[in-house]
Image (cartoon, helix red, strand yellow):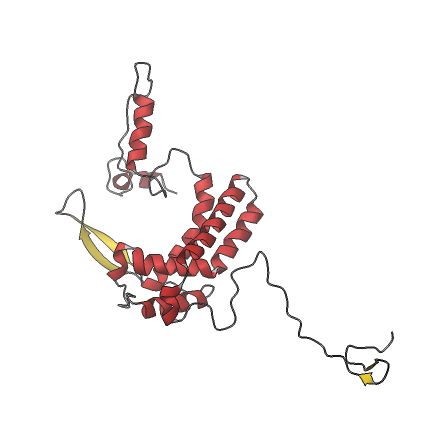
Length: 241
């Protein structure tokens, strides 16, 4: 019908009636981030303790599993899309802020800005700022302190302490990158791996070296940090360039 529109009056048998057009809303994205209404990127301070943390952690865990599976299948385009989805995820922001400000042992240690978040209101405020700056945040300088070495208490080693917002963003990015690299790492790498410890390395060494027919009966202990020093007797720095 030429010239017809949804507002054109129609004849119902006795009179002309203008149709009522109902408001049409787009369906939510099935594979998008946890969309929230404008202005609700993170919970209000009074709602921090009412968040369903099991649900939020479940969303992050399921997305990490999808990234891990895609990396195992070497579907790198899917891996990148899922990682971008993780970085936009509201659940990832909430879980990361909770990990940094509520669970970590260093939650009472401030960076150069002196900020810590030990109350629900402060944690909610950090969550709002982190989620709103997820694509525009620029890291700040770390606070340099010196702590005793574990092997020799007389010596000190430098330690850089980031500001609390930087730590939250680092936790967000870790949830996006860690599943991919866990699928690509060597199976017998135990340093700084989630769910692994020195006991797993001890068990692997025992299983390889035990028995009368074992062929690998030696272990190499190397201090690579000292080998990288310019004044080292055999320095890797001489091979650079």
